[in-house]
Image (cartoon, rainbow, N blue to C red):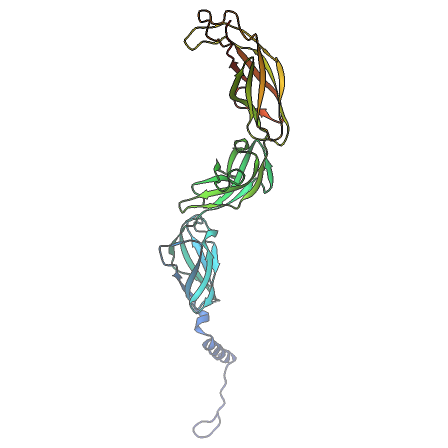
Length: 355
């Protein structure tokens, strides 16, 4: 280079100095945003909001390349799972969140913004998630045929109160009575149900879960109840001397032929209504037999004859008054049926006129 007099001057510049100038120039050209951590704030929901169903979350963010929403508190504590990854829009960083994916409870919602430098959290926004429960029948499976006592099982989320099982269809139609109230266990909501408490037939089994918000039903599971009927005395007697008819019944119709054996024995003496004892004994026949119910038939009779039709000395002192010898009938060996809940042995009294 030349000096003021026009002479050339030669300047020696070190390589290190040249490199320093180049680096300064490069740094000056890097945008300031790439060197600055992002900032973010939750815009929606507002603090104290109660959320249910699907809702939109919105956050503002500067110098951010992506934004996520996280949830602190409730059943999560400080683990803070990501519940939603937002998309940049004209209205901020938005995402749609299904609140039923987390348990009901109180939480702190935060946004986290990212860029090449790192990430930054927003301040927490207090929210409360409050959804109705959800439930599904686990056991039995669809199409199951049930008899006797069986276990019912259901899953239920947000079911803080209880779970009931209901039965619709068959003889109940849409009435859907509660057949069982479940207990929460490690295997789900369980209860034992005696299927014999309902008529045979096809039904839809549903679970209903409850919490402070309300209740919700599961989808119905198709089942068939097919229990054996019970056979027992129906409490009726018809006296047409010298015969006596004693009624039997089935608890429900059967598609099969049902039979039951019976046997008879002279019963104890009876007491007249005014307090006089009679010791008359009498013979009833036959001493044994079998009663048959045709498919669909629910009532039948045992036909007995009493002999003699008059008993000497019956009602002494009250000769004009009939007395009441008795017969004991026992039911045994039911076929295609079960013994009824009423006694299988019963005593019946047959008036007999004194001579």
